[in-house]
Image (cartoon, rainbow, N blue to C red; front, side, top):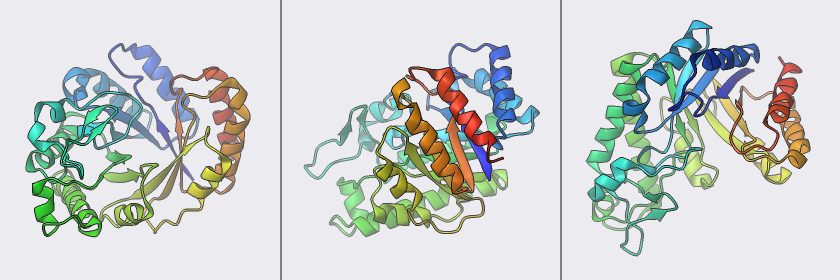
Amino acid sequence: MQINCFYFGKFGYTIVPSQIREDIRRIKDSGATFVTLNVLEQDYRAAKENIDLTVNEILRVGMSPLLATERWFGMFGGVQHYPSVFTLKRPETQLIDKKGEVFLTELGPVSSLYHEKTQKEISKNLDKTFEMWGFEGLMWYEPWLPMDYSSLALQRQSSKPDSQKHLSFCQSVFQEFHNRINDNYGKKVIGWLNHPGAKPSETKAFQNVEGLDFFGWHIDVRQASSLLDQAMNSPVKEFPLGQLVAINHTGLDKNQHSRLESAMEKVLSRKPDILGYYYFPGNVEAPVEAMDIVFEAIKKYI
């Protein structure tokens, strides 16, 4: 079993190098192989040196840094609630709903994968990822790719909405991204963390995107245990690095610690190929105690 630590936001706009080094040491001591950093669109401009310092520290201690596509173009999940600047400034790329209106989420509009400008901007970010920093791979973080009813998208779907053609198109675009990475930067680790709201047909399609090294599931420990069982028992095809199961205790109350203990035990006892955990996630009532639960559970299985 390998371990991935989601180290989200700790390297942000206020950064204390000694604290970063201490965090990375503790993550290394937890047995982690991978450390995944969430990178927003604006971080390529506004947090370049901070990310550089953090990535170099991860590499220095012998772990592999991965990039998570946080909130890119409104199409990916994340822990930070920021709208996409790109999508707001380029309304022509915005996804259209079945009523013919701009598709809106709580964070604003979403760019369409069908638009050439969106694809080019994702490609630019991928290039910057591997040219600016020493990332050894990336994780498509909770991609959310609803049907697009724009005229551009419907042309691709033979003039009428077709969910299967939509998913096939999305598969082909991500395959092109993977080819771009491997052709320009050599072999990188590429993973996919499934969106919690993904339909079975979407999950199956995304698992079949060529070039993935692992496919992952999110476990929110505040959910009912039946949902945890459903995620753990979901079918998954074979991947070079296997299946990632990510346990997220963001927003955990102190009276929910037993749920965290139960989730850690249930997941670890099944020995996933990759265990994911979040390092001191936000809005936790007793963060030190909760993190100790995670670390103590991992120690029993490594």
